[in-house]
Length: 60
Image (cartoon, rainbow, N blue to C red):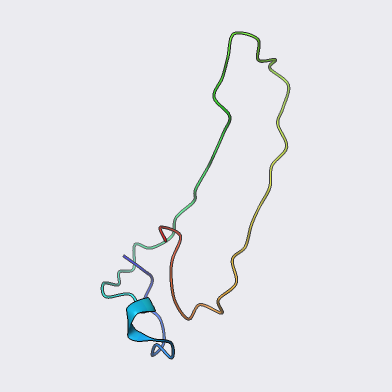
């Protein structure tokens, strides 16, 4: 479910049908470990999506 949001001002197909307070998501992607992987730290990228909290969510 998406976070509760103000009135949707985009086409209805983009507006979340279900909302809930439990709506904070963190998507973490890592490379597949291999036998030759070194234990060195990997870089981290943080992406803050736009959208002005008008529509969509992290599961989109």
